[in-house]
Image 1 (tube, rainbow, N blue to C red):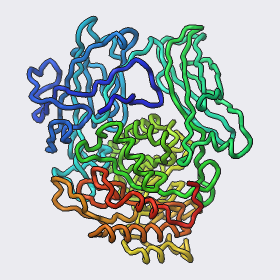
Image 2 (image 1 turned 90 degrees about the vertical axis):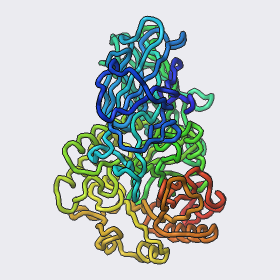
Image 3 (image 1 turned 45 degrees about the vertical axis):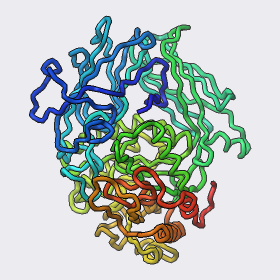
Image 4 (image 1 turned 180 degrees about the vertical axis):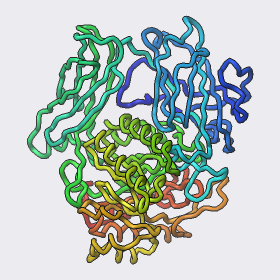
Length: 593
């Protein structure tokens, strides 16, 4: 994994990656409860690749509930002094961390970051030892697990598990008083940006935060705000250019991904306590009647479903270049966005989507049982997800549930319906700036967009079902593929946008994957010519259905047994990218690109 800074919207100078070789062992018999009990380490693992992956150096996909990690590190001159924070990008699922034998933090949740101040646990000189214990029950269906299979061998639409550390581990130096978190909120209509910061440490009345905002070399704002009760929350006004061309130059979109660079300083009087760089963007997303709106204009969505897996590294990306390449490939195939399916992606992916211009639908990985524990786990982690990713301009939609997974009896059990409605309203409370899909695919209730999943492989039938002349009321009275109703009783279509959020799934097993016994898809192509024709036809039909405000084709790349990608699992295009691009762009809507 590369040494790219792992938290791209709060970048400090003094940090060190702890990725690389760690000691490792499984603990199937639960022999150890403290690092001091471990006398031997039989394996080495390459962090942040999970032990199930080949890139980790282990490649063991068996059932292992407990495992341990350990490595030594030293604090060089650049990082020593001040407070030392230890960060984990993501560890699946429950973790305990020790520094030099002192437990410093525990964390539950496999998709979100956590950190702790390890200063008091450090040795005064010499090497330091970090030890991590991970518990990840491979068959627990009450935790948000997404596409991680609970059976020994991947089956149907589920894939190999990811245990333990799967995003960057790193340390950084801060002062005794520092900024813990920032948040950017764009107000495109007012040409303003909301900025908030939370501070930890010694608070006093002379604490201020200074924000400098630039577009390229042009200074847009330099303001200073007092920290009150550990918080600053202000709105930064930007001079409105007035003329559309000049306004558009400052607005973020996939066609023109303008980012505004920020420098943040925390000061006590004239002394600088903390400083770092960040970025933000001016853009708005909202719903107007039956249209999705970007920056106040109707914007047709051309999305591709992306599982976010790699053959040799699983949920972990091979490196930062691989994340950038995935964004570039989606754009090269003609898509203006991705639906990240059942995965909370690495922040570095969101950084490249912000920088290169790609819309992202963010979807919470599902649990598969409805219990009090499952709901508590999902809610806690979903709140952390929104806090982590709120400021990324690329994210345009939040999706807490998919296809009624984890709430299978929406039509008959009130508590299941309450869960959907509660997560919808909670999400709207935490972020009032983005649309929310309560349950994507079918059985919609509380939602800003109605997502439909339909894998009918006959383009003509899709055109008859959703095309010109279709009566919307009749559509919502009928049952769709999967035997599911589109909206629950009491939640009729209120004019929201309708998006075909899963369709296609054309299997073309052009590049078989090692270890995959039988590849499949929702329809089958056997030659380049047949695959091209089938893709062109289904895209042309769906794109010309006036009912839809957009679509999301399944899928970006082959993922283990699913051979329905436009790309092979290693991201080799199955047909030339230029041909995919032309087919994806073939529709009647106004195309701003």
